[in-house]
Length: 489
Image (cartoon, rainbow, N blue to C red; front, side):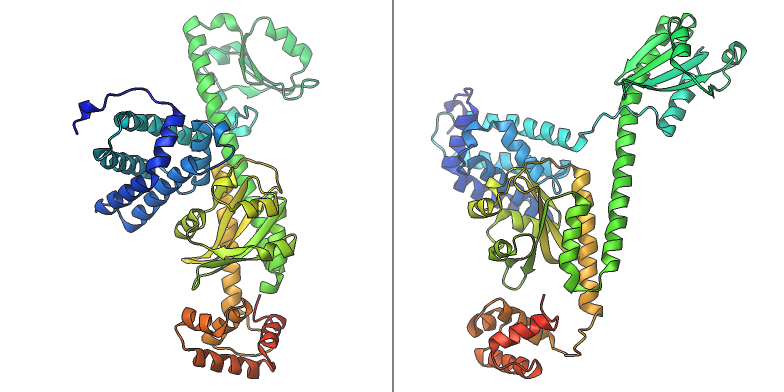
């Protein structure tokens, strides 16, 4: 059909959601086909764009009792925050492009008078996503940190170019006793543009004396007095005002960066002390507890990942009985699938879109972070971090710190896997260790044979060998001895 047979009309967010729900399966199929047709995309790019498209449709169309109260900005913000560690402007561009092509193919065979209205709604979505993502990436806390040494030096070097004889900065963080910094120079030094030198002491009386004849500028919680104001022309005043506005942004960014970097080094240094103080994998529960304290979370839970069966299993954490009940398959869970591919932490503002309702209820989950523990390309498991029912926010810097922490834990685990021998001197082959691990997970001989591509008869032989080496009379004693001797964790 021709485009003019589909007249354009404005549609609401609710109408757009209903359209997506009706056509989600076809649209998802069109998107996946379109991704495969983009031969210029690498396999990683194809996988990530497919994840983004699938999760985007999921978060907008999944049944949710709170969806009625959620506006478009809220849903898109939740989506961006969840995938913030893999999102960048490159992938957003690819995502928008593929989404539009998927929509175009869908509309070709769609007999709906509003079809093109839905198509024209996409630029609204794209614009909102780009703006929200930009805000998320560039979010900073205004700190008004003029009193730091580096900021003072930069500010002074600029203001010395003007006919300013005295400069006073007053920080009003503490209203009862504001912090005062002062610099000055003689009239002749001012004419020659000699550098301002620190005034030994500036008190309130001296400040009151010069304030009447000074140009007062306010930036955040800082008052800036420039003396004498009669020597400054109007254009110079405006130039200084504009500079101070830009300088405030710079100083806030710089102070936030330094604070974040210092905090990161402090946390990693404390983590190194924790890792060094423990002797092996049997101390892993103490390391997980240490992560709670270092990263300021009330709960940290470790889940082991079993690659040959694509399963995960709760291992360590508060309320151990609940933790060890939590297990399942990675697929088709979009969240875990994405994390295994990207090996990046994921922040989940609202878990209702990506975590089973039973798990949310069991642990009273609100916001949480899921972070993989990796060693190079191998995913050993992951930790979840949350505030036990309380919602919280997370920044890019927070996620990057958590990623670094988990990478160091992964290196710690693999070092002990390869370099620390059990004190019992019992040596098991790689195949025997695999059988012992599956046996501890409760699998029967047939299932173990399927996983390891062995016959049931061969599995029985391996179990007999384990019974002999571990001096066990049955399968249960084999597993018990494995844990006791440190062969299983």
